[in-house]
Image 1: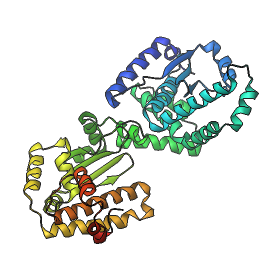
Image 2: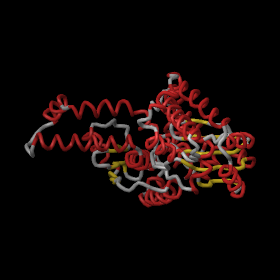
Image 3: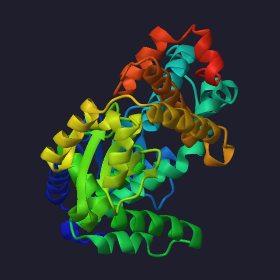
Image 4: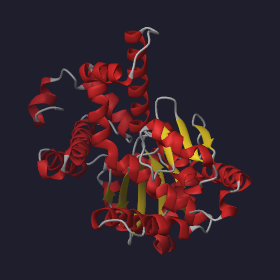
Length: 390
């Protein structure tokens, strides 16, 4: 049971407003489409029975109208339903798909019954044969873990920020072994890598600006930043794409996750990579945006790239890397995500090798892709040399 002071509607309103401001500052957005409905405590049991909910529940979120219904003044339900499910359905691709499916089903139900009266049994019979309903149920089952996991994380996250950990621990302290491990795993990830990393790992929209990228770097690299010469942001920077960071450091390794790609090199690697015009190095240095580090050092690297002549060594290097990346792209043990990244890298290395052989010095991935389309898409020489771009 919540303490009387925590059930006070003014308390909930304060937490609602403060959380909105906090999310706007942290993520660059807050819930905008989600509605909040508070059911008075003396009417809650009636509401629960009508909705067919568990009598112990204190809230529900309806994706089809993006409304969070909570027991009046219940803070954990506000965190779970409004900020957890609400934000997930607004700012994740899977959440948006859930909303779209629910609304498609609603539209089909309205068209079928055409304002005629019907009872629950009629609705159940319609849904048994409806393909959208079948797909929706399967979609919910496949995504239940991340859907509920994010809402639980939100409860933990906001409880911690409002110093209300006791409420969270009281609710989740007696979980079964499997559920307890899952919740503790989320908390451990958050404690280790920080808030932004946790939101992004849950596949939420990523606002990839300098402010948030720097905070992310500070969270995940910690004191290693003190010995890091450069961090650049490159890639598309789209809301649901992975975050591409180029790092010059002796302490930070390259890492690959669905939400984060850290391309890391030591200073000596940079020198050697520039000599052979490695596109994995030249591209982020030329197009990347400074997140952290020495701007003069970045300028020095750019100048070295621009004056570096084409050599036979560079051509051989790019052909060799093409073979390596092509081989990796066929390694099923890496998973589809890394296989696709390796295939893309193979195409870039092959195009770069052939461009250099033609005396063309192309320094960015985007220009190499365009170069391949214009110069080699129908070239027998290109196909015969290394099998072409697959």
